[in-house]
Length: 475
Image: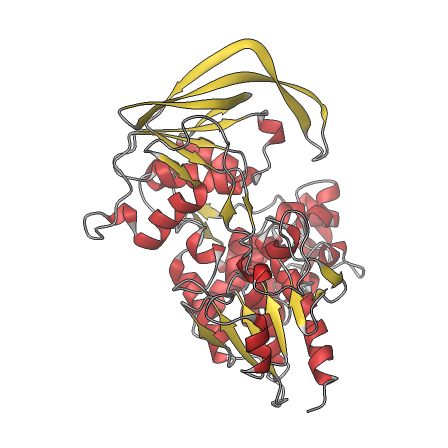
């Protein structure tokens, strides 16, 4: 039963903390850290929502989930109805409820948060998605009658999956072409098991396939087929490109070619994809390092550091960041989890060289940094102190400084305009239409590396544009 008094109290009720594994235990395993809400906890947290008539939280959500509507259903105990309300706008709620930075999006605009802590929208979204799945009550959303139109989606990451779901619901035939052997993009290859269990992602992907979406893996568009061949030979009426940004950036300093130096992409994929933590059951280990240093301060850096900590031979993990804790771009929840697990944070230091012996990494040479005025990112500019050299001992370095785009698709299509960094330019940003007729794009391939939910928002926006475009065609 809903406590109507609570519904009026809003921020006077403390925010409900989710259940979690104990830091001492979780730092040694790859099981999920956050254990979510019980039904009673979910209803209590939902009762904090003020059910605003003009909800700003919805405007903060890139896919425009009807947040007050689903939370009201949670408070009433209708968890299945709440899950289905979320799925009207978000086809991957169990994923986004786990990995989205809600604190910088929907929750940032929550009115309850003006005088207290905002409603835990993300945790509630996760709860209803899990409840529906665990209780076997998943029902397919209504799919429109077949339109006879065919849409190709290039890339099975968040943008491509979101676009595919919306297009399938509109009655179109949708085929996703994925270059790697598993769909999901960063969701599968980049995010660790302890933040997003593979079984959760696979359940969400299974739901999309039951909507009628076909997924072809090990299919590299730009090599096996070009965009023109998809449209002219395979009769696709439109194409959406959502290939993300998976080309890692490096430091460009001496020693990066030493053994024991990884990009975060490589490191996370080795562990994530090949079950390196289960050696020798899975004979695909990461080298038996003892001290791992991660360079960077974003979510990927935190993922790499916390993953390294859980490997059986690793004794210590150090995170190296050129600014202070206040400037860390990673989610504060991830930072707090890492601190609790024992990650060492080395702030205000920046690498200038990686040192080694006999071809193997032994330390990172750094300089100490000072903070000045804010730069173009809004964070305070960091500059090196004179004569401030320090050496940080490590036998492995994971570089997590962001990533760029793979130029394969754009190079195979001369009509596709890109910017100086290789991002695909959209001629009409309202629908994510590119310079090539019938070709749309969205997500990191357009904006550069961003969040999962922003990529999904771009996919939804493009799906609307694609639908309008293909329905205007005559055959």
